[in-house]
Length: 157
Image 1: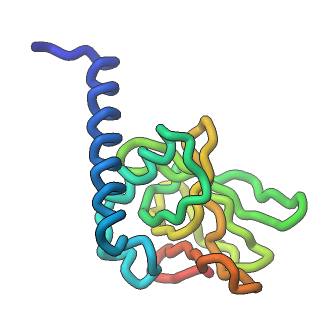
Image 2: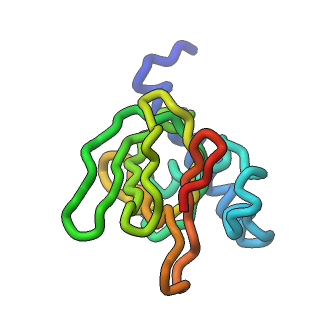
């Protein structure tokens, strides 16, 4: 059986969603790796990509996620209200994710360039373009999980 490009993409999306569903169900019965930032490195890229793919497919938001990606595009800072450094990363699955890093609460990543690898831990918010990751910093009030970005062995929080 030969699959054309569209059918192959659908098949891969279904596989990713099924895997993410399995991971979600499994996480309900055992501790999740995304609960604490110290265990993020133990979570595989495939697992984190599947969790994000599932959140995107199901329009989920307010979800703490971790992972890594490659900087695809640097965007101008958002200076309306709280200032945010913005850029788009591409996950190994091919999905893109907008990073909105609050530079009023965390240090700006001045050395960031397109093509760089970056690790993240923050809150996923659904949008039609792939999603937004924010809360990549500590909460000064201590009410929200502390997120971070890691670039070239330096953590920005």
